[in-house]
Image (cartoon, rainbow, N blue to C red):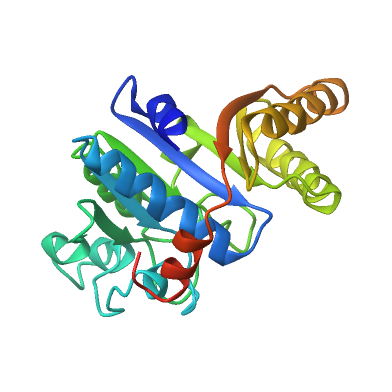
Length: 230
């Protein structure tokens, strides 16, 4: 996905929060592949896992679950240096919380936001595995200021689900640009999906949808990620 990598590279620093209507396997594979590709291009990359599921991104890359969370640092239960790990693939990894996704109304929301902001300033590119909190808010306000990306495939059910997700995010975050990344697609297929969704988003949601790129089918990456070897 060299073309996709180039789209993410300039200007820096940049923050991307990814949501997906596909399974965790596809989302994890995308994030790890993008991070590794950017790291190979000599960029400083940070991946932040916003999920709290034990079957999520951390498990898939084989990272131990005793790594400190940003929430624990905000509560002064762990030291900031314990919250990040450098992986063999060349990028750093952190996680937001352990048991539940924090909301903007949490007592430590301010401290969490400060820690998050400080952390992403240390990287050129930050990729966030986006998950909404119980009150359907983003756990850190800064995420709203970065790019919000929706991962979709070429199937009709996926496109419909992506539109519903886009409407939900637009209702909660407000009218702002969103980006689309199309999985298991050629460039032509991805452009077609984007054109149709962008037209519907503009007409019915008054939302601007930008094209981020296509991810071709890659079963090897998906298998490796699923087994924690990516």
